[in-house]
Length: 487
Image (tube, rainbow, N blue to C red; front, side, top):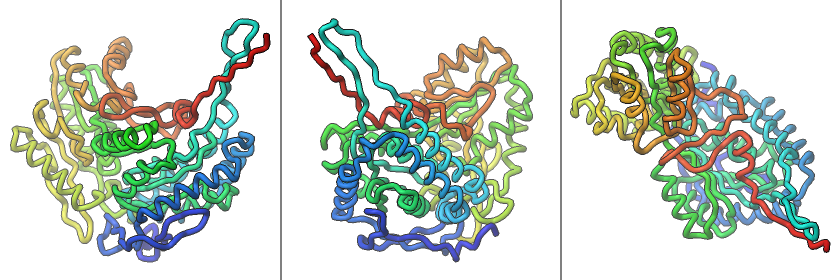
């Protein structure tokens, strides 16, 4: 084992004003790798939500964080990043024990993304300029950027610390305070990272963390002391958050929501075996619990048999196991409810005519739930496997004859988060990239790298606004025009 899950200890209370605060309702978080491993946690009540938001606003005002010299803010974020790196093993164990993230991947990727975005957005702190606007000579007009105040950040369970850091790092660098609610299924690593922020010199109260389910998130969104809301999760929950924010202060929101990403493969795609490995990884990585998973294979019919045989071989080569065992490449499904949902969609898809080429079954294991990597061929646009985000290792396959049909199938009616195009024809690649309605398009590739410069966010029901890049920083600031009469 990479670590002993039963030896992991975590803060169970809320993190408010720089310290752990006891109170709330007692719960336990079960490990998806072994349901017998469970860590205690306390869910916040309305009073604790109120306390966290008021603490953030008081700290924001008292510290002068929003008006502080940008380089001073950056210096604290750099020290914080160094501490995150120094505590990588501890953070990784807290992440892996209750999530589907495999421990070596958290060490090699997730923790480095957290420290990386702290440094990246720290650098952004003094890089956003105002502008002088054209006016008559008797006037002088210029713009300045100001933080919103208190940002409510709600993060999901599939990449817990990465997607939390995508929110709190730019929001804090831009001069805001943050109240973070991680998923109730994966709360602990974020708490430790928040404690390291205070150690790095972030004023206590500027970054608070609350535990709890949907009712805690809703209370946070509706709180009159919250000025901006950022959320990553399902499209249905995002719609509710948008409605709550509109009805409780007309707060701006950014939403990074679900996906149903196509792998659009033309017959001239280069290196079919390498491509097959990419397609297999695109749906089995993190057991398919990825918003930007390549969950639909849209393939030109004349190479479909050959490519599917290769993809099947790669998908069957994965090794299921716990997040802390050596050799695991496919982690468990986060909980029994999600496992039931995956199985239900696959069963319905097969009943509606889809042909399973592999998988389509649960895999038994002591104390954990796995779903076998699955390929469904002959999926129609009416099939549930096409219409719904499955969030599991299930690849839905459709075939086409010409470019026009391929593009039509690649464009999903509801989702538009990411897409991949595979072809040797550069002109075709760019035609397809422009034609596909998606926030991100990869050409002869799939998946985000650990760079921070590219904005990430979707079209249609896949979201509003962007995380990362310049856009992921600027959204946490509002613009003010200032006029001076000099006549």
